[in-house]
Image (tube, rainbow, N blue to C red; front, side):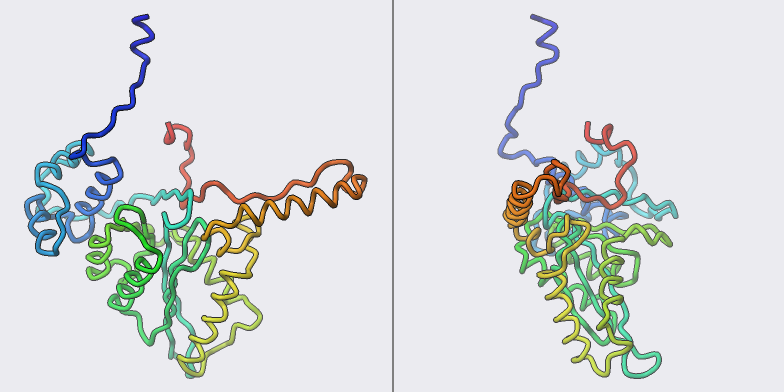
Length: 303
């Protein structure tokens, strides 16, 4: 029937030479990054070749910009003070990471050690951390690179979110993320809840009963953090992930743990139904999605 033909949607396979939607989004992210937002596609093309990467053709860059209503004179463009609210969705591990730096008090007044932490927002697993004498973009760059390698992150797979600290917005970090094919996201200025997962993890650490008032040396700080993150990843029953451990969620054996819990509850119910008022107890499940700033009208966005 002709009317039915109008409503028929046919899945067509992309030609081998075509870029996938995910690849296009990665390319757009590179073009809109801090280091390239005021560069023309020709300049970006040359710069990426100098860095040893073929991103795509200049023509493809212009096409992607046009598809996203961004075809304009890109040189001498200044950023406005209008910052977009970050809206990030994770449905599995290693899609969205959040990272931040916090101070640890040293042996004397006004002396500090600096703790860098990268956390996966879906699993809450701390994928990377380091304690250093100072806050430096080169150290952040090293930690991010090593963590991406250890987690086998592929180009276009990951978005990494941070606040607007100097290390987070530095050119060395921006260049590294571009080289790795990692999209970067930043909190809005003076908005504390744009980076809730890093803040929550730091709070968990600093409210531990064994968290010291200060550390006598950097080795002591590193030893404490090593023990804390080992506990946090492997033993901590996290309320945000159904009281599972971050490790079980991150490495994919949460379903096995939940099934075992379900069987234990079912046996307890069968042994004494009246204790449960004849209702089988329900487990708290692992959330299927985790957001930074979930949009209010999510249904429209999904459609």
